[in-house]
Length: 511
Image (cartoon, rainbow, N blue to C red; front, side, top):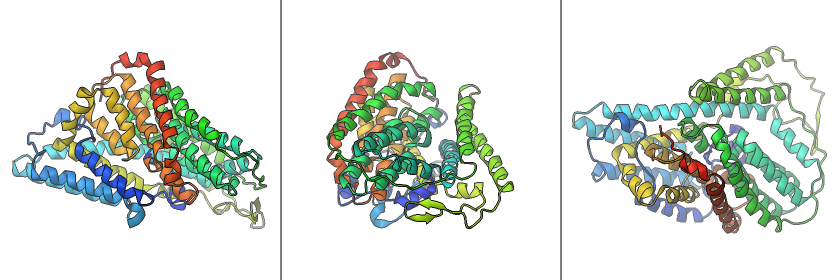
């Protein structure tokens, strides 16, 4: 689950440098590009359901207040993009910008005797954020619990010990990234698979570089055909625009997006077999049952949404209670471990990450959620919502989705998401609520999900791996293969429009 652009366990974020947003001087070029794009209007349209109940009676798009709000957002986003250099967490500038933007809007409306319209719009935006926040919080807690129980470490050790050659590992890690990301989310999956690459490919920088590119592409592609694979797909599902099972129509296009560049990169992978390792990692007590509970939680969320017509977050929070009760059981049945017991590790006799004898605490797992990402999402939703309330998003809606057509607009969304984070882009599209068929909603879901693979900076998975494999996986190393990834991007769109042609005739009632 994305920012691409987002959800994953807190431990991984802090140990791999996930907070780094840009690499090298090339970041400045893309910062300037982003400003130009935002100002030129490629941010898309209108505030969703709030527009149904609140009509903006004051045109602020050509006013000093309107220009100030747009400038504040652009400046805040530039600060976000320069996080590598400033070391300022990305949530801080957008939270501040959100407060200022809505404050100046409310000031103008209050001066015109309307103190209610702005309040209603803000509450609507807060509701949008709250549903996604609770959903992601539950998912992050489960992933953190599995991480603490050594699930991912055990998987890494198992793969390292198998003695696969470089090319086999290239396809194995890519394939696992593709099939795990729809469940775990693309970021967590990419981090786990990159750990395997670094463990077995430490003697081959070329293998690690190409393997990381392959993992980023695979994880983003896999996350595109599942509501749980990326934040953008989750947003579309929770809006009720695409049913849970309809996402699987994107499976084949997603496979194409992954396989086309992987097949070409395969021939650049060095031959040979890395030395096998005898590392053994034992999953902690309750690990398998937590995985089972996670599956039950997903089933609960899907059932609540599909059969009871309840918001998916309610099912996820109900599933979080499963973990809370199981955590209580683990705590009550906890037995201290003999300190003389040990595990065989890669560098001798070592204890697995963390203390084996520690008591499982569900609230420690909650505390280790990636709060910076969650608060960043809050700031983005409120900022984009404010610009939509002013009317800037509506100015571009007709040009993007009527004059140019939805197909061109949705393909452009994917290209834009390689430069600008796909969360604000997708939220802006959802805020517009364009009148599109199911096939077009699936198209924008696909492009927003996989478009970020074209640049290492275009997805949370890419940014994370640049920190995890620092010096081996770089911006320019990825950029060299961008034409190949772009070929996969185009092929996946063509395949979707071919095999899912009938969905372009199925109307969708937005909102």
